[in-house]
Length: 588
Image (cartoon, rainbow, N blue to C red):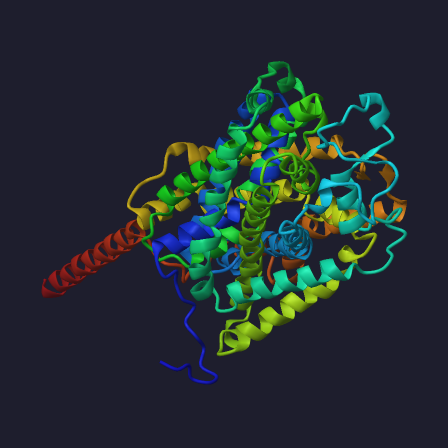
């Protein structure tokens, strides 16, 4: 049926249970599972790193995952308005989460543009990072995959691998620092435009289009990961790589940095505290079993991280054996793994173009799910703020276009010669783990103590017909806020200023800008609460009570309805008794 002009549209639901599961899986399983978790595992104690990782999974990851999904499913609201209905005092958490997502949308898609650029070059007859005979190469270039490489290892100190030169000189055209922005890299800009167009059409119709796209984008990366895993494990040197990845070093558990990294990895990997899960949960039917969904999705997320480590380190083990160096010298994290170490490794394999294509398709599909999930979270949250204006025919598409263009023009500086320095600034400060930790502290306090963990338990039981394990109540009230607060304080104490490539130190104004980006989300939480307290009417206690009270029009659980019926029945019985007594007295 055609949409009537000016009529407010229905909010809608997922087309099926599978759409919700695939959308959430695509969101939480991203680049961090492939390029961050394996590196952290090897760097911070191998198998021993799994201990702090699992501690944070149990105390923070899964409890917040369930809490946020249930909040969305119960209220059917986005990342901001759900807080307005559940706990108005904590509405700043919703705004802060959306701001972090906005920063994420601006810088995360640049990674996909780089991956698309690499994908195009992967179809070349000879991979451009496979030789030192290109125009961008320097005299210090060395081709580490060369079969006749007999250079003494000490002579490589002043040399640069061909893959590194391709990344820094061809892809990034890296300048000397953030002070030297330079000109725009037009090839990367075209790749960026292509990725924005793809993301726009993935979500332009909301969950109607997103729900269909995820059937491919959330499943195909697993095919690619399986292919790369099998190929990696059959390479010579793979076993040494896997052993290096998981060899336990229990002594590292005494290092606070190990625990901080585990906590940050969990919060990012599980996409908690920023509102994405709330938005996706809000498109579920009221009686969807979100409790079971969250447990399975959490298991899938952590399992994928573990398996991805085998795929990555088996290849790095092969690469180290080919070069005759320790694995620690070739192991990289983040962009260094995706755009230097792994491309360098596939160049050493037979049929390098095939494995390069598989790898970069996997990177793009892993990242694009997370990107359009963040975009959908922001879009839904804004539309739910102004439903009368924005929930009309054609309005969503226009708003999404404005949002994409705003992010695009805001990130143009990241595709310049000095863009990588700005990119790192956003990654290190704007979307810092400390920001998310801060939000998780107040999120668990607000829902555990102000709204009430017991009440949330009753709601989940009413929606799913199964009562969650009591450990979740303990986490929401005590463990999650305590662990998050301690981690946040430690991250502030252990803070190290950002450097690039271990040698470039940013100017003071850049550090000030970074802290401004970080504090912009952190200060929204107390700032919003204080603002609402000051703007309210009545005494201080009345304002506090008002801001801590949930919406009276929220759906009633079966237990609440039963209490209301019992109360009404008791009142009726009392009225009858009173009436009979009065009639009896009048008769006398």
